[in-house]
Length: 432
Image (tube, rainbow, N blue to C red):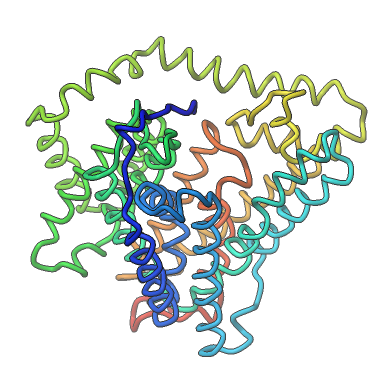
């Protein structure tokens, strides 16, 4: 996404008090992670929105790009420490999905040995591996019982809604994304969180549990906020994927919560005409020819260019790959190809691609196993995690890069804990 500069008169002047408030909020989030460890998993799934919200209004966050990532990883460490004190060493028991996820990360790091652009590979790994190891290796371990999983989903709802609402109401918007320190942030990340929030809110009864008297109003508010994000970011893939997954999983599970949020949200936004100008501004992006052209030129052609380069190399590089992030070197593409499976095939080679496919396949099998393992109140909670995984996996075909997809990697390794024999749940909610 090209950076759009703001004139000094339009740049948001952040008060120094915001730094202090930010520190206080982070402290409270850490206290919450210590008391209810599951919410740290929710922070990871909401991290893109929380990061942009913090960077838009807090100077220390806007001037330190990796700060929010490390703070999120820190909350996971606090949560895992709390779980270790409660459950002992069994918390650290690895599962097959987790092992494959970690193996994939290790293999990405190993490619630095034979990378065609070693400095580019090492630079990318240094900025991503430290907190991804925490997200992939430790975040799933904070879920030791069903209550932790519920806390995770509640955290997604609250943290995403607060962040997105603050961004919608108070942030300065550029052409499609919000302005942060004079440049336009990635709009797709916001739409991705909005899609995940919409899925969680509609496929479970968590909102009704938290707000039993005003749950319909809360669902409508969530729907309106998410639709505003979809319209302002003009994120086509995220919008279509979110609604398709909500519809598919709602019909499959005979779920009723998606009806008020979708229908009333659409009526409130499009019926009022309050965003008529913004809808008109981005209407061209929904033209069929425009969508097809963007997919062909910005995704498929670039990815195929990378594959053609990789396929022309010697056998060792075909098997082992060009090296992680090689496509981002200016001597090749100068950026990632946005189609993660093909990126993995070229950069990690046939061997790395086999690890990737195995990890995705095992995760899907574990999710399906968990679907038949839980009954009652637990079933929609487990189902929505499966829906989030499908959502994030679909998005890997049109945006981002492998190690930049923290939410996808977390959901890739998460199902192992759901099927463990020692994973406890609320009374009468698990199949005997």
